[in-house]
Image (cartoon, rainbow, N blue to C red):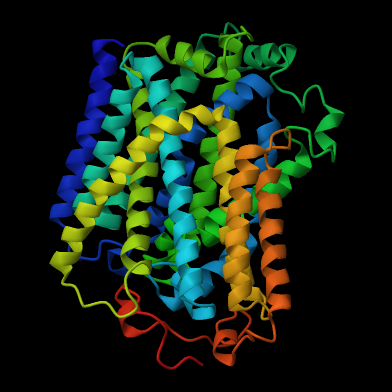
Length: 511
């Protein structure tokens, strides 16, 4: 890494910390979790996109293209397929309730135990996800910068925690906008250089990629891509079905994303932000797929692991561009960690509080927030040194990260749409689904990567419904609980304390 590269890298790091500090000084609302519900569609959309994008995607997506071709493109149409239920059902439903934690809804529909179960599962899920993001970026950044990856884990995790502790969700979302620009800028610069070194430009790149098999399964077409065999690593059907479940979980049951709907100044802003997120995500992932093809062509030794080839390509860029690509990778990392930390603390400070806790001043809340930020940061960094042993990055994302989130989606779907699901069904079935998902995702190999999320969802739904049917007489669903179904024309609003962002339990007068 040359002096120009190091300068570009450090300018980004210092700049993002300075920007967050200046933003915090102009903060007009003490609301660390909801930004006063005044955010517009532009920061909401880019924040959702880059939050879910993460360094795992930055590295794993092109690495998957380098090693296995363009099978991963089967997941891109799902962004449009999932938009219908999210914009027509989930966003209006949750925006109307004006909560801080989406899992407070499960207490209204079922009971407090179910809320705590979902909150616990969310934190376990997102802690491992943040750890994977830190590990992924640190390993590839280590290859690019020659800085030991443990130092980079500490640097990225500590910096993200610092500005998140200073400004809360508003600072996180606006820094995400800057990080999106840096991220896309790094990808575009790397892609431009990769094409410019080809003697014939884009035509030569495509011809070489086709001859090397990097455009499979589309060119030449591979009939196995249409197979229904669940043991095939990636097919069209596994990509569509499995990714649909994973995306529905992310956009409809993940506190980290739903919290951004809650910050919107209006329902229209939240919906427009979601569509803006889709456009940004499709653009970034398409560029990364092209980058993966370019790296596969430039470094064609198939015996070398994809991550090593990615690092070799980054080091071969002209002075300054390597640092810009490294800054983009760091931006993807920090945007994942800052959002994950803020969401975990939102869950911890709302869902795990007592049902009637003593009122806290805003100063006390911020003090507790910053203290807990340190605790969760240390835990995340510790897990980052462990998660790298779980396998290649793309497998970790689809088998473990996406798969473990499915029980959350199952609980949310049952709460919203199943009037026969009772408290015992949600509680007992949810625990079984969580245990099964962990065992299945970590212990079973050989299944198509995208189907782990589907299997875990189906098992959790079946367990909850079976327990509900077996205990229907002892534990009937009450009219007050039915009033929280999505299909009802009117639903209870959250209580006054919830509207300020801190749920205090069930409404006093449910409909």
